[in-house]
Length: 277
Image 1 (cartoon, rainbow, N blue to C red):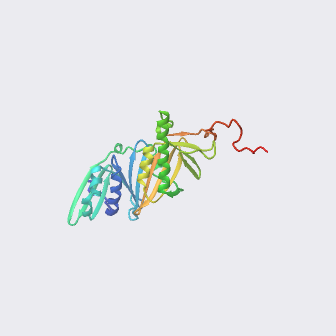
Image 2 (tube, one colour; image 1 turned 45 degrees about the vertical axis):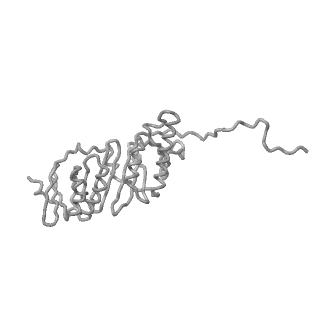
């Protein structure tokens, strides 16, 4: 049976063009496209623990459908030629995808086959693709400053001590319900888990959600042995979010405050002395 005999789904070409323009610039592999339940969703992943998602409301699409978009198709639908497209219809038959593109009186057909192994998702893809119900809202600049300062501190420690002082050159983030502290001391000793994240992935997540106001949250998973850091924003009607998987966890109590003496004690008592009478 030809895939073009399957029931087609009409996609919003303007939304698809915009979303793919963002997604394909970050993709190193095929892009996962999921439609249905009133949404058009695009996913980009890396197996080492990174996910980016772009979601756009599509209330007229009820039938669920998912497929992989190869780089050539993604570039075509988001490139200059896409501005001449009037309509895009997509249909699937198992792992075969058909696409009918209409420009004026002309009609073009694409057909390709995809394999699940081409989409190398992190092991926690399902959890990473679902935003928590509660998110902390903050200006992008404030969050980015904290992450970049943590990176600078990490580089300085490596330079001074000659070797990494944190797991895999990672940035530590302390987490307790309602509080997140990046590269700092924990608030309540013994009650929180301090998770490690790769700086490269954190910066990539920040770039994905670069807007004036962003949301973020950490969700412990696997009984607290791992965590997912979520970053999200709203852009041109799209909900954008990135998710970064932790690389490790430390549940040790943070070190106690130590006062370090930087000057020799005064040998002759205080500097201010009473004048002899």
